[in-house]
Length: 113
Length: 111
Image 1 (cartoon, each protein chain N blue to C red):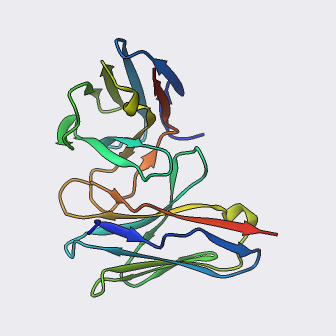
Image 2 (cartoon, rainbow over the protein chains, first blue to last red):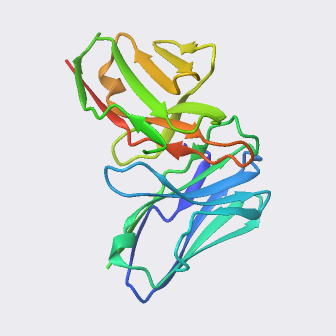
């Protein structure tokens, strides 16, 4: 079992819906991330949280809104998405230092209709 | 120029073969380097970190050449279970742990 848990695993939503993706880790990691991955493409960074503060926003549209309620939880709130936002959304966590790789969750496969 | 570039692949090899993947990165100040493996419709999983002195983990050997900004992964005695996409990953700067992924190289090992 992965140590980073994402829910739901699959999500279908309409363009007027509001939904949230959830991510949880209990490894004591202090950095958490959201990545987006389209088919046959590498993961692309969206947001970085470090010590529960947003430290990087890779110019992500405001229809994606991240939230870090505590050091173990990371949410991604979705509103008014477009069909081209359909993708695999991956959460990851790591030690805060720069020499560690990430541990990824299994992702949420999002389809916008 | 992309920040991280990899061999295009796919690589189709028989079981038992040795296969090498190459990767280059553009930012000479890059701090840390990794190889990840991703199976179809699964999340990426850390295969190994890459150190300047080179490092080995069983059948896998990773090398880093900072002067040439070049990273390699060698897989010896390929197994069917090695079939996956291999992602070269770089942290382009110090400070926050921001990892940039290469496009990946697909490996298919056949009997």
